[in-house]
Image (cartoon, rainbow, N blue to C red; front, side, top):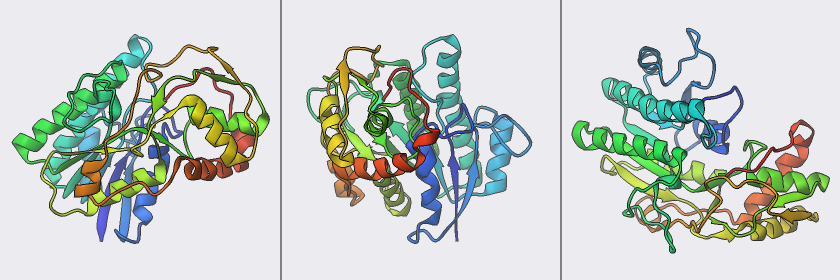
Amino acid sequence: MIRLLITAAPGSSAPASPVDCSMAAIGKSSHLNSRVARARPSLPPTPSTPTSTDRSQTEAAIRQARPDIDFHCAMAAGHPTNTDTRLQALSTSVNGTAHLAEAALSTGVRRFIHMGSFLVYQQQSRPVRESDPIQPYSFRGAAKAGASLWLQQYAALCALPLVELRNFSVYGPGEPARRFIPTVLRSALDATPLPLIPAPRHDFVFIDDVVSACLRAAEHEHLPPGAIFNIGSGQTWRNDEVVRIASQASGRDIPCHTGSYAPSPADSGFWQADISEAAARLSWEPAYSLEEGLRATYKVRRVCSPSLTPAHGLTL
């Protein structure tokens, strides 16, 4: 039986991303026939809830879990906007990742899968490749880039069995209400006018496809330490195109008004993943179209809509 450890996103007891919310599905996979041991660094420190930024607690949690595979998802939520959030992002992403990697080396994990981000890349006018330079344009991207560079050294010098999945714009059930697609679907549910910046183009990838990529990375026996894969749909959409497709998927009109909120650092430029490496080496490709993923997410949101809270600005 394979033992898994999944580090969750810190900052609150609620999921910080659809990845955090849905990674538990990995433990139920018939492919892995697994038992999940899950650390929750998001909770206040207690003897049973370690934080990834505390080395001794991290080491104790890893020794107790003895995982074969570590899915590392921990990262402070959102884009840092002040001193406290900038330092939290740096501490969680770099120090927390280093503590986890050291503990993983000491216990001999079979695979260390790091959930990276497209935010580490320099923006391009074409699909981004794994060989493109790391040149982040935001504090969140810089924190993720620091973790990536640190882990690559562990892979090269210490033979950490690392696979880094650089996820693009992940969406799906469990995504926080403040983010773009949950806000779009809330407007479909209650007809609240949607604040919209039409121009940015993003590669939106459904959470089930990300989980599928994680399973492929976990099961593959011959990946070299430090392998990196872009995980996206391989397509790109403007925000207003996403709204149109969401309207089709939900069967509801979505009223919009433009230019009415401050954009996040991700609300700029053109983003599209080149996923040819994942297709060739992991035998992975996304199964969901944007409309199919939005329809599945809308069904969940429709059931859960009474518990959703209004957004105070949109983030990606």
